[in-house]
Length: 354
Image 1: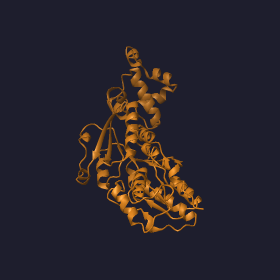
Image 2 (image 1 turned 60 degrees about the horizontal axis):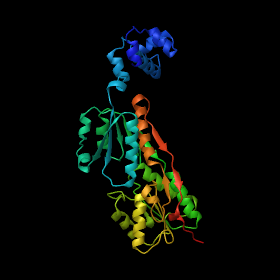
Image 3 (image 1 turned 90 degrees about the vertical axis):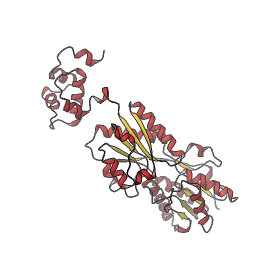
Image 4 (image 1 turned 180 degrees about the vertical axis):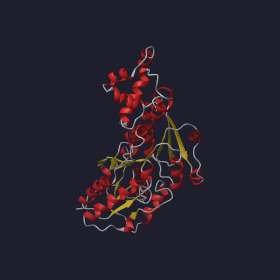
């Protein structure tokens, strides 16, 4: 039998609760009455303990406000929303989300949002059920995000628009660090004598991609190298360079072949390497190529890719942890959380110009 079953047979008093928590009787009494003179954390602890001990005078209103009963008679449903974008990156992120939600005993409701549903402001059918929180993995329109936020549930965003602006007021945002890591990669290319360094990535799409572009530009500027706009594909494309045709078109527009191409992610790097090979060019002997994400399949490719490791499964777990924290701290200000990254140098960037 649990503590609640053992203690419910006898009348539990305020003094019993105070003794167990080593608090004064007056503090416990105020907490049970949900007085603002007692901190939220202490009130939660007192009410949770009182419930577990079988204290009979807890009002349903107080129990509901502090969600004490959730641990016993409610399974949290967490909705994850994303676009149907084909990328190796997302598989391990979603695995991390699923594993962490299982640890918390939560139900995962995963939804792909079509362009039509986003345009017509149609929410997934899961929102008709009881939803405890939302994790958003894609950059949706302001109108669609507003529709989600109107459901009055905590939201955690992975990434955000280039200018976080209003998004940072609507929910917590988790961002993978990219500026310093891509700056480090670009500095390394420059240290090997390379100066004609290109870039491919839709810097208009998201904060993270824009940060990576800014890291690339920063390294060139600090080295006294003027960025050559003719070998920079940082503009918007329909699929954000997630399709090989867009990457190939960008490279074919370059008036000359760069000595190196810094790619905003590993998918773009893979398309780049394949297209260079189709032109009879070798990586890294003819063109050095770098990525970002440390997708497992790319670490096994030839040549092995210089990239940036975030830890995608850990990233997925961190998104869940952030949401779980928010569910217990609803009144705290919204936060922007940066996840540190690690540069991994491999063969694909090992090109030197004497």
